[in-house]
Length: 401
Image (cartoon, rainbow, N blue to C red):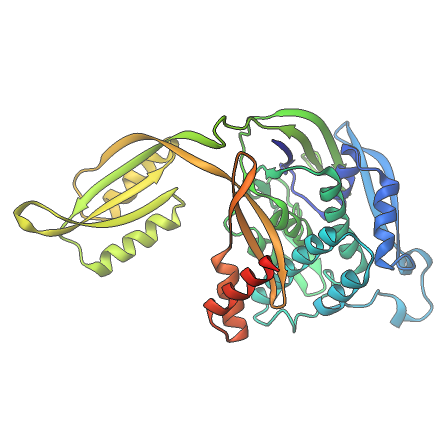
């Protein structure tokens, strides 16, 4: 399987991503030509050059805004228009870009809009963007979609993402690093902080990862075929670069991947349902592979609960500690098991209510099942005062049409 791997040891921003893609082999003339289809040529131009950080060479991309380059007498013209999500959707829909590029671009902006709306306690319709609505952010995210589709990889993987530290000045004032929208976008993803006292990952970069990445792993087993470096604008203590690889990973012969895992079990007959519910919340928050409870009959005909936790071999001791601490068990059974999993890909689907992530299950490189992510559907149902069932029916109908 051919993949794109993001090595985000120094974070990611939209312009670093464009530089990395060009350094990886995307034709800059092709990128510029595709971006022209947005109809915004009078607002920006791309400046592409070779550069170095800590003696590592790569490609640097600057999105030069026309209003900054030429200046304005009228202070009211000193900034590009502050577009909202509706404005951005109109620009992308009315462009002559490929339909798949449009869908991916819209998904990136939709993820970012939802993150901003949650952070500021408003709706995506009421979010009035500043940085996000600026021309350079449109170029960064639409450009990311163009490059991804040009590379034609089967999956996107990423390392844990460095977020940085300190504070940053933005349209909302002085904000902590990572920015709240960045934190929201990368919730549930492996991240690190503090390698630099600067903003290492921007909301735009986080939105790109949120939309494209299928899997996060710090230890990929892959054969690298090409490497690119996107050069950032700062000279920090670690190289301010985004490294990306084109690589191949080995498919399992039967179409699925098998790995070792640890299954932990204990049976309990002296905890209340409320206490067991709290224990499950604690276990789930620790990110196991799986947790489930099964009703059982124990000695002396007592009804009880079998608690089962599936985790990686490295996490065995950590979950044993959680079970001993948050349940009344005095003993835990542990078994090494083989876990077989189908390959999964994630694709954005833009609906009339917003973007939904479709999770595809693959066997022998063919999609055998596809379903929308529950959280996306639940948010749509709540925000539009409709039933979850109606959301599912509309999505499946759109898929079949």
